[in-house]
Image (cartoon, rainbow, N blue to C red):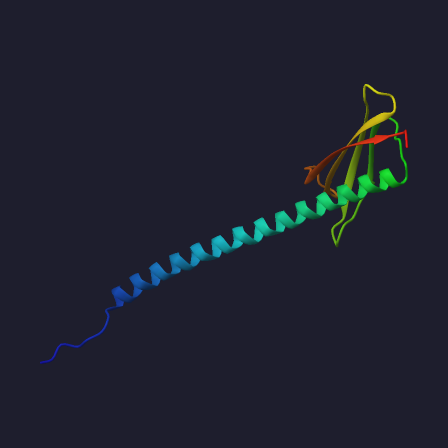
Length: 121
């Protein structure tokens, strides 16, 4: 009598379990990569929104009073909110400006930009 060749049910189930664990690991890595890419896009767009806001202040020749101001600053299809903080410096003709950008409705800053504005132009 000739012995039949093939795999037993146990061998097939073990192979299937190994493949499913590998596929799960691949999907988890893809999920992390997608999330990282999304966060990088958000942070990059937030930095552009901060730079645009600083450029607007400079072009308007703004010299804001010390304090905190919040305004909408969208970029791309994202709705950001810019928190503009103005502080006095040792020299009366300069203001230290800090712009923090976060998604509207959220508190964590995605980007922070520091700059200086002057009254003497």
